[in-house]
Image (tube, rainbow, N blue to C red; front, side, top):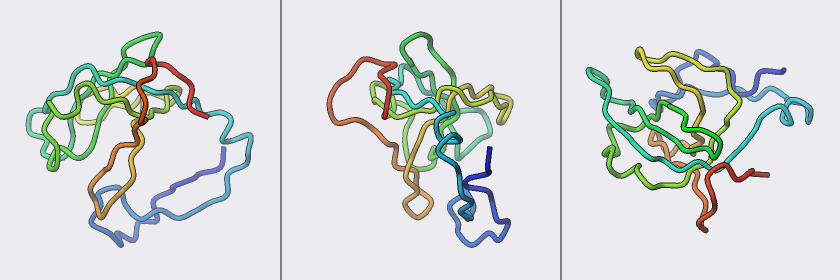
Length: 129
C-alpha cells in the first residue's frame, strides 16, 4: 500500500497531527480500508495525557476501543452518543498504554479535530461508501 498522509517531519503546523505530504494511493489501496459508522458508548480521560481520550465505539459487530485526540478541546461526556466515521480494519496500535483498535476520522481545524459524523441516525456498523 502506498503511504498516504506520511509525516514530512517539517513540523509546519501546531496541529499535533503533523504536516502531511500527499503521496498517490491507488484505488485498490483505498478499497482495502473499511469505513463504518460507529456510535461512541463511552469516553474517559487517560491519566497524565492532556490531548487524548480513550473511547469505546460500537461498530455493529463489536465494541472497539480507540484513542481520540482533542482532549484539550472536548470533555469526555460530549463524545458519548455521537455517531462518527471510523476505519475498522486498521492494525491495532498501542498509544499511551491504550490499545486503539479503530481509527476515528476528523477534519483538522488549526489543530482542533472536528469529528466526521452522519446527519441521520443509522445503525452502528453501517458501511460508509
